[in-house]
Length: 130
Image 1 (cartoon, rainbow, N blue to C red):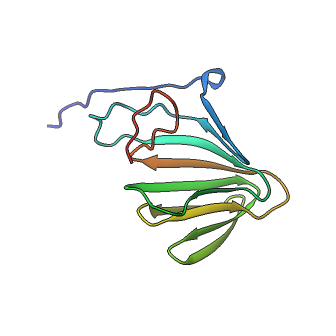
Image 2: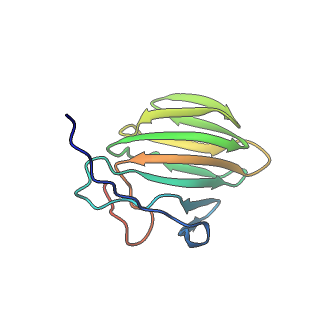
Image 3: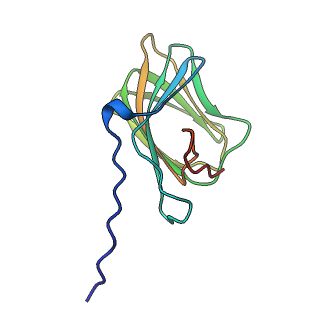
């Protein structure tokens, strides 16, 4: 017999999403991270990168794993000395302890769904695990 797991739900309503804007890069919160006691916490966000912009952890990696799905636009993903050309519909997953970057190589805004574990804590008031 299996023990029933406690159900914990953290919803984020469309009008309540936190947003973070940096030069040429924007993040929009899709998930609220659970407390630091949550062994399998995730952070999910919509990522937008303007043409010529880049979202990067190039000088360092960070503990964890990431999954990205390009929803629109074109980009180049660099990790561990390799570059992968991506377009809408492509996805990738990787260990994030290696420096990495996603650059917009197209003429329109690159849009992606991005999931990180453990959470990086991009949004104020969230758990920040580096």
